[in-house]
Length: 311
Image (cartoon, rainbow, N blue to C red):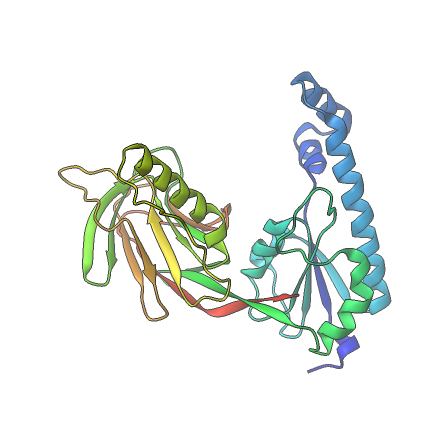
């Protein structure tokens, strides 16, 4: 391992909403016209952009004093190769931290909140001004870290996809996903809006909304148990949870295997029955996806690697 101050730092950044609009409309003035024509406040886009750019400059300044560093946009993460001793810094919202973590293998990851007045930052315990004091501690392995359990989908052709929050398996468009599902001794054919497999970290996000909505619907029909509530898992729990979205019962589809838990030695197995538009993506990033079309088999389980978030 290199000396602490020789370790390279990789800074992951994102485009602001204003930059996304300029990429679409070519100029800031045309973007402003579009937003204000719809009655929205363009100044909020400008404020967010200015604050992010200022904090990005402050972060880069700290890295220049540190030594070796590299800046990449999160859009390049799927093809970026991290060195085994790299320290990784994510400047964004929580989503940037999650998007970054799934491409790491035990690397220390520092989440920086660029605007604490705008973002709660569950995964962003630090701000750019903390970085000069923080980096030497992280490089010397003297800083505590939280372990984050990850999920993995592996296809029959060997392709793999990792998830920090959750995996979605279903159809790209608003049509039913058709597939065979198996967990343990249970196996059935289903037609649904797809299913979610969540980690402990993800159990506080999309998965929570699915369960909360299901309990509310059941309660409106008088079938929810008294005092029913939802408890999220710890981030490092060696367990995954899955839930099927809007399962449809018919002569050819069943609805018995619609939720469950997967332990360290368990697996969820799925076979696609969709001729096209079947997908598996993770953490809400559909662009980085696996095709899941007719005949493709997927095995979902706990990943062999984990995230390491500096706290």
